[in-house]
Length: 211
Image (cartoon, rainbow, N blue to C red; front, side):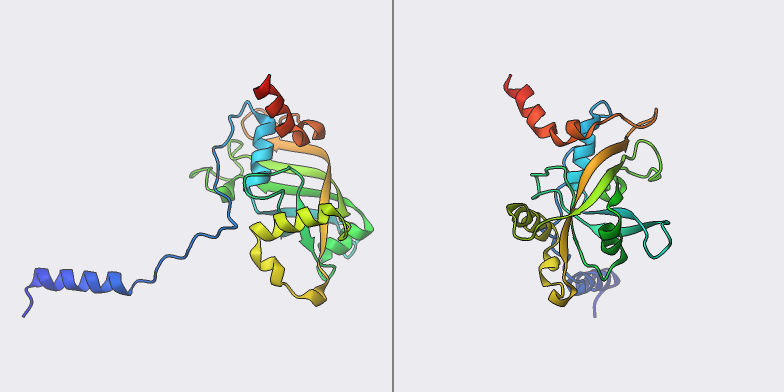
C-alpha cells in the first residue's frame, strides 16, 4: 500500500502524463522585435505594421447609406522580418468590405500594439500602448502582376490557411495606398509622419547607417 506522500506523487505524475502537449507555435506569427523608443515615431509605425497580422479595416458602407463600417481583417506588409509598410489584403466581394472599396476606395486601417503582448497590463487606450491608423485608398492589385506574386507570398506566409479558402469565393488581392498616417505611441498627441517618411523608412535607415 502506498504511503500518502507517494500516493500524491504518483497522482501528480499521472496528471502530467495525461496533459495535452502544448500547441506548436505557428510559423506565420512573427517574432515580436523590440519596440522602438517613443522618439522614433516612423520606426514605431513601421514596427506596428510589420509585427501585427490583423487590424480593423473601415470603409464607407454601400449597404448603410454611407455610414462607416469597420471589419476585422487579416493582412501582411511583407515576409516576416521584411515588412515594406504597405498592407495587402485577401478579400472576397461576398464580404461588404471589398464591395464597399470597389464603389468608394476611401479607407482607413487601424492597428494596435495590444495584441502583440508588449503593452503589459495597461489599457489598450493608454497612449503608451501604440496605435496606428493609415488612411488612403483601397486598390485592387492586378493578379497577373509581379506585385500580386509578392503580395500572395507575403499573405500566405503569415496566413497559411488562406491558400485553402474556397476558390468559388473569388478572393482578390487589395492594397492600401497610404495618404495619411495617425500614430499615438506616447503622451502629447499624434506624431507627424508623412507617407514618404513611412514608406522610405528602411531606405533612409540604411543610408544613415552606411554614411
